[in-house]
Length: 120
Image (tube, rainbow, N blue to C red; front, side, top):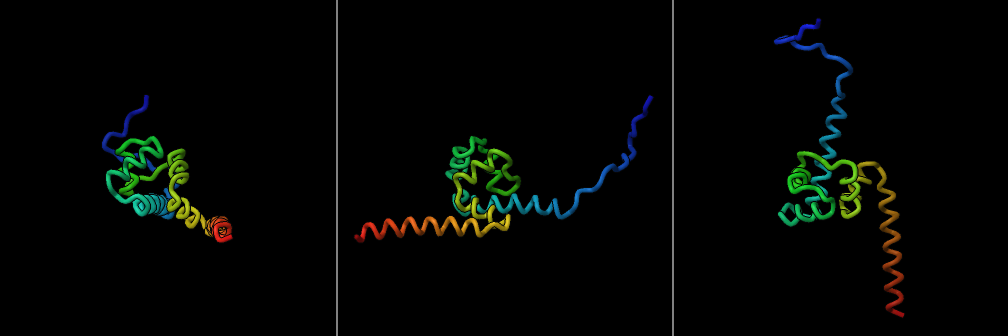
């Protein structure tokens, strides 16, 4: 029969979590919070907007805005769908700023074509 290790430390198993990975996770939360606050502000209206965009609870939306935790999975996709600021921040964090610039050029071309049509 096995005895429990009461009062004793259990042996460590496996590899420790690299510090870089833990720091990146915090940076992700801060990046999302900053982008959302930049676009929506920090008011109660911002919380309601996040709830409407994602279907998340008020507490979850508050945590995202505070940067204490970040969205995962489907919530993150819904946020990127609705927030241009967050979308661009994610592209920049992934080193894909060029894709964002191509989208901006395409939008500028459409706007210029519409302006030329109005002038003619």
